[in-house]
Length: 65
Image 1 (cartoon, helix red, strand yellow):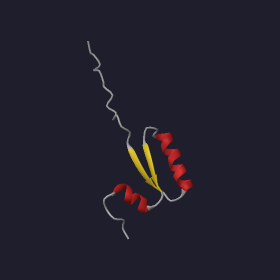
Image 2 (spheres, rainbow, N blue to C red):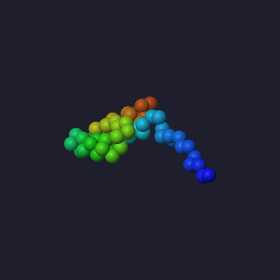
Image 3 (cartoon, rainbow, N blue to C red):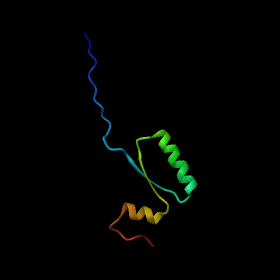
Image 4 (cartoon, helix red, strand yellow):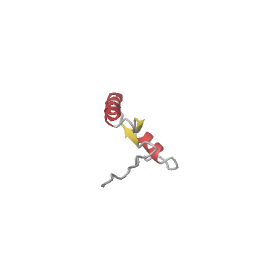
């Protein structure tokens, strides 16, 4: 008798996180709608300028000129 092995849920317990840098509010909204529709478990963060991204990803560093 062949038995099917039991499977476990291998999904991570914390959602994947994505930082979206987009200066257009309309484009940011479209990106958010698309990602929420296709990947509802993602944790999305938005930054509207490159400097905001730099501060978010490198809090101990100074901003580039």
